[in-house]
Length: 188
Length: 208
Image 1 (cartoon, rainbow over the protein chains, first blue to last red):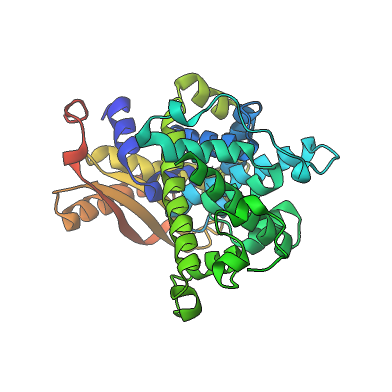
Image 2 (cartoon, rainbow over the protein chains, first blue to last red):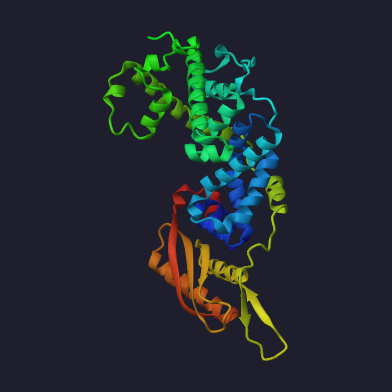
């Protein structure tokens, strides 16, 4: 079997097989995971950071960490959510390192000037409105929301990850949800 | 209605407790997360709550679409990106335990790593078209010569081939390779088929 066909078969194999091989040290299998999940991890990191700077570095670091820690993965079939956790942690670390001293949570966030409802195609309106609303959220609220709604974290896990009390995490999430819903209603 | 609300822009849209018959958006989120079970009539019978629950559910659905759109908007991982990631990893991180190999010379100390044996086991797939070997475990005290060892491996097979035939061929192939290249006392080779790949989803170019 030539290399290309073999690698095509690997590209089609499910996560349990591909991650299982990567756990055992098969670099070609790990490369399949990199190709398969880079867009997801980049998209997640973009939402988490609300910026494109550092995304490449964070995703690369996440994959390097994943390679080191793959043998600890209990079930290779769950590699996707496991990668999501790792890139989350990396993104949070980056946020911690660059966090400004002021609590900008309470500052007014100006609405973005680039998007107006009339310019949004109807079919995409809700999705774009949500994206815009997320961009406007204060960072604490956005981080909680992304961890919860995209990362699938529990309230306890969010609190631990962001080093805040659970009650604070729940409060930030409630405020985020209210803000997003209000903004999306306005755009309907 | 009370006089205590301090966010008029939210009151208009009905997400404060006074709009929700005393409930909070947090409680409604928990209620949705629990699948609206056990049923709470003070929520279900409240028009304000129903509106807010609808908005929360819609938000949840839109979130899924947002992530799908975000992901689709990202560039595919090109080879230079893959190379960049791979350049940062430590390749010998999986050598595992050291398996001794007997030598007639008393001064020679021969061995093969567990990682290399796993590579041998994986390579057995090359003899059986379409088969992919997944994770491979060597269960036993492989560092002791002659100790019984069971080989546990996952495999993926193409749709259509009788699985028992494929498993039998793969087991034989793995056995041959281990006997040829190691001195492991293999007492069994357990194969779990984790994945049956459907060729109807393959492109023409991939067949052959």
